[in-house]
Length: 217
Image 1 (spheres, helix red, strand yellow):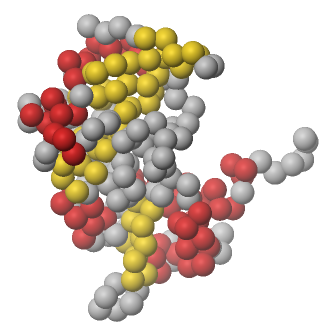
Image 2 (cartoon, helix red, strand yellow):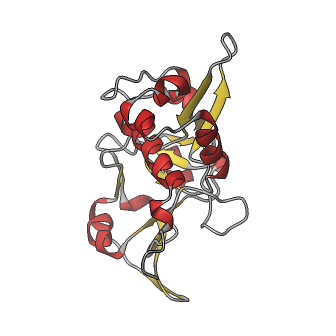
Image 3 (spheres, helix red, strand yellow):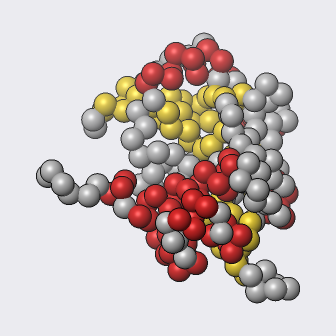
């Protein structure tokens, strides 16, 4: 309906996008220092021109964090000072301390399922060279498909191609895997930043209710 405000234009969505950009990609550029575990002081963030101009408050941020269906963020109070801190749980292109932010997965049996969602337009490249972390620090995978019990993040809902990764084999071969605070499986890939196709267990294209098996080399 004309004139109706779309969900993506709501103040909370705009605040979430601003936090996502800042905490995942733009902290250094904006003069925000990320401490241990990728946390930043919330009071410093709210003083930034973009946040101050829109009059976003601590309560606004707390609401966005609490209501985020993918649990993208975590908040805490610093023990020494009581100051509120916030971080993005994963998706960074800026350097953060993985040992503080993520839990290393060292046993193959600890990743029974690792699923990556993508789009048909990307499949030709993926089936030849594998999954790429691109500009991010990690390749993202879910510990199941969206809609499965307990799965809230790791894959966009509109994905057209679902790839299951043989994480156990990859771990045995030396690839590193981590689990984020909101349950996303992450891997930096090999030295070139890829999970090669030899670690694909299956791949299907979603067409309505149909699942069409895909082949790769």
